[in-house]
Image (tube, rainbow, N blue to C red; front, side):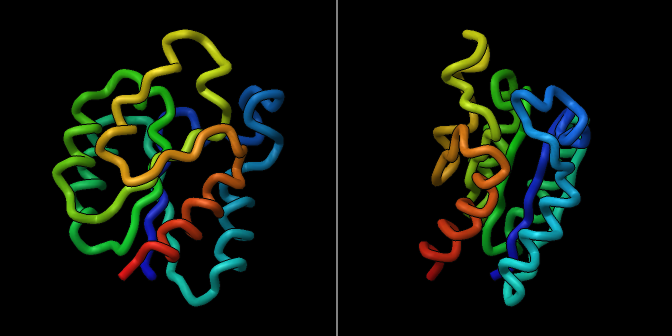
Length: 141
């Protein structure tokens, strides 16, 4: 199963940024381990701090991948355009949030991505990505 992980703004700083919220591990390090857990499933990774790049990636890959895992970071709470992009593609998308957005600031408690996504995993730390891969594999045709 070919799965693309897309991370949005500031997630390039995982392991450095607010470790009390996001942990001490870089995403690149975590992604290596994730690839080892699923050796028969090609996993790809893309990160951008730019909303348009995330939308372009969804458009480019959203008809050829078997699944997409999307952590849009702060754009989850602000971007109708990203939600529209998810709704416009045929590939199922799982929304992931490392922290529990419902236990944080009020503005983080709403995500525009939840409705167009097939599943939402919130507050499981980096393990949410593994859970998303397992979900996509379990629900694939």
